[in-house]
Image (cartoon, rainbow, N blue to C red; front, side, top):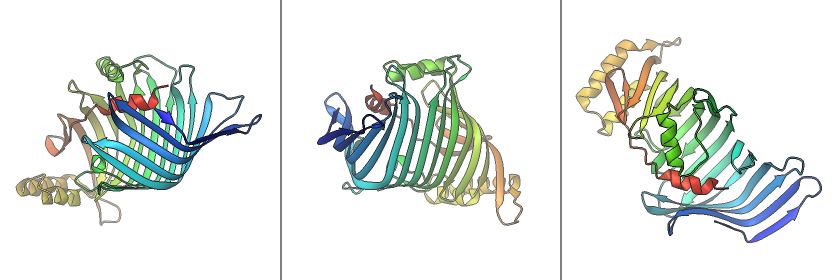
Length: 310
């Protein structure tokens, strides 16, 4: 659903611009709205000679509403700048998208964790090949100073100092409904994600990794990575203090990590180069289970479908 308080068209015959005040977008399943977003000022522009390419810029107050574990949550705030550039195909689906966000701060009236983003950049590009063993999409994501509600929280807190992610989707997911059925078919045909680079600075942990991710028969992540980690001793202490691992297990884990880790060049920090696997909703290094994972709830796909419906 979409509505606006005021719409003004201008710019022709050069770049066509659409200025919108009080733009309101939302999606729902059945009678219940799953998400809604309102922006005070929105500008949409496009060149007549490139009508399939758009630039969208937001400014002023922002209002976001969504369901968190079935409870409506409302956020209000503003951003220094939000810019979206996208190209679409003849069916109305995006083929290339760039999102830039700077200085987003949203506060909730529900007394849940505020949403804050220092900087965020997202690029994705659909690739023409449809061969099952060829990349169908490239994605790159980089963000700094990100904090948010419980869905972003881990045992190390709700703030991510830095996240970098670049990957390729191997195997094509068809633009057909329902989307979840197409994801299942993609999995069954051997589709997977090739993670070229993952970097994470979160709590005591500084990690870099690369590997592959797929989905198991329960639609949960199944992955294999090579990783380099700093801050692992401190991470074990946090997990123990929160009761996620027993004290005797923490002591054993730290002994093992002390043996297999290496001293860095400065002689102060220790570096850990280990294979990491994800299976059965748990993260392992070798036979050692590090931490459990919450199950992926695929109901969010319905919301995603509502957002991208042409």
